[in-house]
Length: 567
Image (cartoon, rainbow, N blue to C red; front, side, top):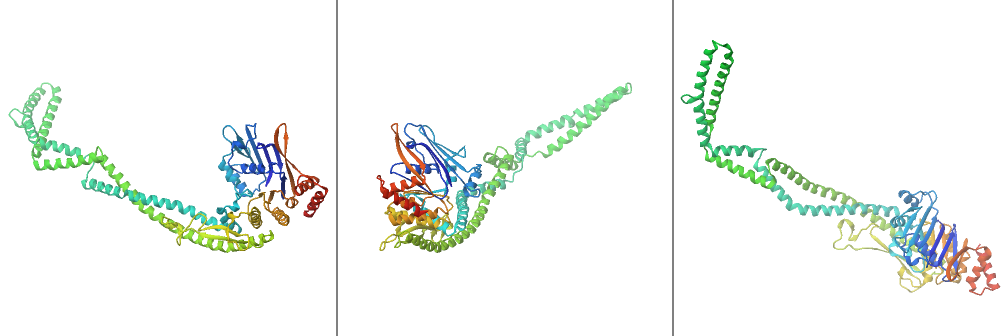
């Protein structure tokens, strides 16, 4: 509920503070006094776009402030807590509109973004005016009104939840299929590379051994001659090293008889002789194994060529080639997992599709039932507002699916969206013989005002909005109809805080509170003032509303009688 409204340097308002209460509050005054400016201020505090043109001439900034009393268990309190705001003292919204730089918004003393402001104030105040900018005349709101009236919000929320679960999955499935199509050629390449590496049957450092073997095969004759000459020098030739060492050993052994100190040297020469004999024997074995095999050389060179090609394609070493094989296996496995993910995603989508189809179908059936009930109630309300001949219907339509529509978001050829499969349009024929036409097409301001009021009266018990503001609700009406409208507003005030700007005394008399708005000129500047009216002041204001500029005793008596009849 709106408790206080403060306006500074805004349009023709210099400095204004209004304290509101529960019940029906009437705002009245001469045309041009600034009543609509107050509505503009409230709209800005609820998140409307600001412009520096609204700043009072001669000022650099305009300041708007509103204090709302909120219930601890309300949606607004929950949203405020999610943003980390303290709700113990209510909701204080402040906006500063500047000629220079950025406009600023504050919530409970903390700087806030417009997104935060809009998310908090949504459905907090309903402003109904003459010019069809209110929610009741926007066709995208009609479905919400129908669902709220019929208590269908839980089912609608269920459809909303399924929709926002299935849409990301449909997007993911599309991306997975595109990825799979794109990688079909890639997987062929990976499988070819894997086959090429596996068929080579390589082992680490295999190329090093083959390089050494190729060198031996290419130089077999030279190796044979070198090793044979070495064997001859060490053992086989006349005067070979072994033979000469044997002679040295014998000579030292004789000397040992004279000096035993030479025994160790003789022993070492003996060991050297045995070592050289072993080396010679090993060289003979090596020489016997030397191959001069052109066929084997071709095989080795062909194998090395294969390995070198693999190294050029997949890495600088055979170890790098084997690492590349592991990477290829991983990539293939990942691509194969796409098919599994596609199957899993399709399964989830199929399940959600069945759920959203069931929920949307059920919701649509209940909407048809609710639409008839609501239409009948609106016609009855209009009858009490002197529109007894009016016909009112709610047209429910489905949207045919286009050729490119996703099959998972269709039912029997109709599109499913986050609100189900239906769209709703309020249709009315105000006069006998007229065809039904959309509510937004009503030309008469008086008829429009009464339809809005009828809907508000019906929805009073179901709407979560706490404050209703009616601007020009009396447009195009008067006399008996105005009396009925006043009674409706008074009845609405039993469920909501109602603030009504009116020019009609027949409506104003029902107010629990009455503020007079006036325009004065001081020091060459125009400014707007507002003040709560006493009983006598109310009588004078009602008289002004009845009789215009010249107030007579008759109009005063009439005004007093009006006020007494309402209370």
